[in-house]
Image (cartoon, rainbow, N blue to C red; front, side, top):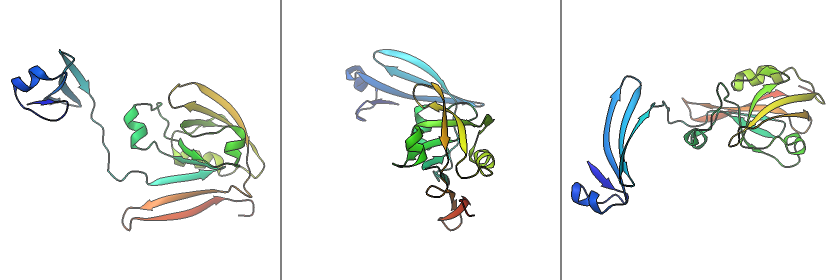
Length: 185
């Protein structure tokens, strides 16, 4: 089947007039997907590894020092900027928070806390849970697009920026908030 870039046409006559044509010729072998493309007057072959997505989207968020942390959401994964063994992505930060004051901004991945690897949110929480209000924390981070590693130090402020998490209950589709650490918890 041949489809023009604008979605119209089918067959060789439509392909002859199109600048960009996608040829829907796919075959699946084991864990690879073979794709044949016709673009810019050339036939190209591509091998793709299919991914698995549950369709639920984000189901776990951690709010730590004014930064919103989560596993990389779909639009981040679709860009292909995923460091190996790191699922702690900063999706946003709040003005005036320790994250803002010390340069822990969005579109970064946190790979280590005080020298301990943080491959996912549960591991991250395990490392930061025992830290006290006012503690200095050394973070190793990676920028999503440049892959430049950076080490920053941040002073925790649990009085105004306590650590908490939101978890989506897939049965009820309701979010549950749990306070992880606060100065008087």
